[in-house]
Amino acid sequence: MLIKTAVALQLLVALSAFAAVGEQHRQALQPSAALRDAQQRTDLRITVWYPAKSDAPTRSIDFPPDQPLFRVGRVAPDAPFADKTRHPMVLLSHGFGGSARMMGWLGLALAERRYVVVAVDHPGNNGVDQLTAAGSLLWWTRADDLKVALAAVLADPQLSPHVDPARIGVAGFSIGGLTALVAGGARIDPARMVRFCRAHPEDGTCKPQLEFALTNEDALAALESPELAGERGKAGDDHAIANVRAVFAIAPVVQPLMPATLRSMHKPVVIMAGSADVTVPAATHAEIAKSLIPDSRLTLLPGVTHYDFLASCTPVAVQSLPVCRDAVKQEQAHRAAIQAALGLFDHVLQ
Image (cartoon, rainbow, N blue to C red; front, top):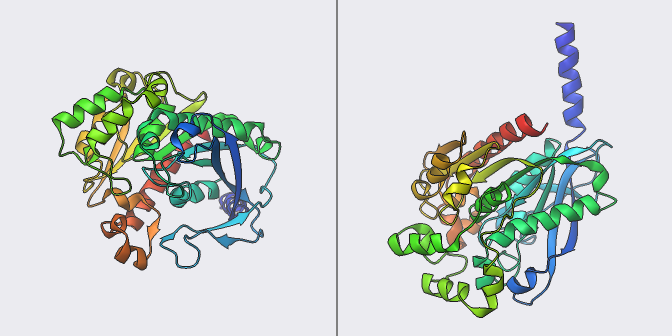
């Protein structure tokens, strides 16, 4: 009994030492960003969350600050790391028109459990900048964004001593779920999505999205334009990230992925989706991934919609934002996703 009590006290002390989450920001050069960004900038914005000392002063990152539409949590800006050990990393990709901050509900929870979380704002397809057709369609460049962010962290003298480059996981939501699968080894064929949408125009992924109303005709014209021809030629290349050992995909878009490459994924893959998701229906996406990826696991959350996986909507957002009106089970969805992500990454990376 005394031994068990001592172990419990040690665990309590260890967890309390990581009560605060630090936040730092970086920028890195990403040449393909110029093609996607409305202002042709080559900067990639990077957000890093990590375990910080429990006494580090914190501030809210709910946004916008004056009248929040989304609740995210609190961070300790530029706080020192909680210790000098090397932590496993999770690369995190947001959904269509989202942002790193929009995924803070997951990123902060992972950082509280001793992970260093590296998230980005994907150029041309984030909620901070103007959305573009290129940013919305060049899906494979998103995995390259994560690769650039990882390289930046590993080269950073303040961050690199605290991360273990051999223990990397990747997570993402929606088109970010596709990004996670590509980072884990899947490959993209844009023609598959074109064929799918011609055969299934009623599928939620084939309709103009709330965040950026791009029709199928507009999307096809953009993909076939001379401006994107060079980048489109790289679509089917291998965009996997070295040392990614586990993949967590939330409501992933799957139809653009080559089935053979999904079948050849032999690292742990956990998938989560909502049974009431009409934006990226599980039957045509998450369940397809589950059927193809060896030994993958899929959890369908009853009554959960696509936008339940956004940062928590405030009452103001529910009244004013279409994406929040169907987000009725966010607490349940967040809790299940955090538990599943920790179950995967704790098993594989810790």
